[in-house]
Length: 422
Image (cartoon, rainbow, N blue to C red; front, side, top):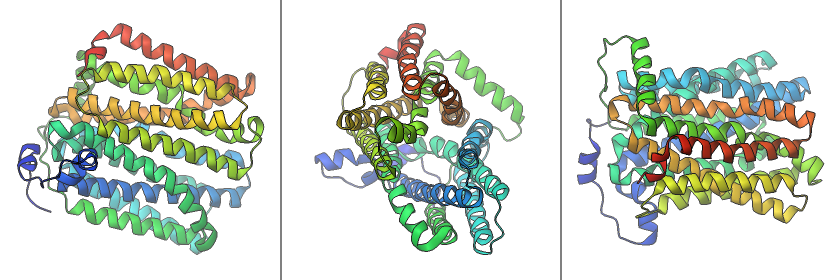
C-alpha cells in the first residue's frame, strides 16, 4: 500500500540503473516501483481481456451460429468507452485514483467469475453474454481512464514519454500473445475454464494494484459533478493544443483503425487466405505495433515531437492506402507491419504529448475524454463496413486512409502550434 508519493519523491527514491541501451529503453520500468506495479497490473488485466474476447466470441458463435451476434459483442464492448470514460475521468479527480482502479478490477473479477459459472452450469444465453460484455466494457473504460490519469503520479515529467510508450508496448505485447494463447485455452479448457483463468489474471492484477501508493483527489469533493464535467470541456476548448491533440487522436480511430475489423474480408476475398492466414495478418500487425511502442520509448532529445507525430500520421494513412490496393501477400504483410508500427508510435506520442500539455487539476477529466476516442473504432467500423458493401472493402479502407491524412493536415492547419510541441 504505502503513503502518498509525488513524482519528485519517487524520482529521488528511484533505483539506480546502469546506462545501457536496454536501461534507457526500460527506464520507467526499472527505476520506479509504483509505475512497475501499475504496468504489471495493466498487462495482466489486458491478458484477461483477450481471454474474455476469444472465449465469449466462441461461446456466442456456438450458441447462435450468427456473425451478427458475434459482431454485437464487439459493439457491446466498445460503446461503454463513449458512455463511461469521460465521467470516470472526472471521478478520478474526486477520489483516490488507486481506489477507483481497485473497484473496477474487483467488479471485472466478479463479472468474469459469474460468467464462468453461467457457462459451466449451462445457464448462459446470448443475451447474458451481451450483458456481461457490456458490464466488463464499462469497467474497462473506467479502469483505463483512471490508469491514464495515474501515470504522471508515479513517474517524473522527464520519464513520462518513456512510461506512456512502455505501457503501450505492454498492451501491444498482449495483442500478439493474447489471441495465440486464448485459442488453445478455449480448445483445451473450454469457455468456462478460460474465463476462470481470466479471473485469475484479474485477481493478480488486483493484488498489484493494492500495493500502489495512494493518490489524493485533485478537486474539491463538494463541487457538483456536472460542473466538473463542464469545466473539463471548457478547459479543452480554451487550450488549443489540448483540443488539437484530442482531435488528432480521433482522426485515425474513426477513419483508419476500423480496417482491423475488416481484415477477415481481406484475408478471404482479397488475399485468398484461410483462418491461419488471418491469424498471420493480425500477428504481423501486432508485431509492428510493439516495435512502434518501443521506438517511442527509446526516443531521446527529439526537438519537435509534435512535427514527428504529424508526419507519422500522414505517412500512416499512405501505408494503409497501399495495403488496401495490394493483392500480393508479402507487400500486404509489409504494409501491416509498417501500419502497426506507425499507428502505435503515433498514438504513444499523442498520448505522451497530451499528458505533458495538461494541468494536473484537470488531468482526470481530459484523459477521460481522450479515452472516449477509443470508443470511436467500433462506431467507425459501421460506416466503413457499409461503404465496403456499397463499393468494395478495399475501396472503403482506401477512402478512410486518405481522408485520415487530409483530416490530420486540416487539424494542424487550424492549430499550427502542434508542430512546435517539444
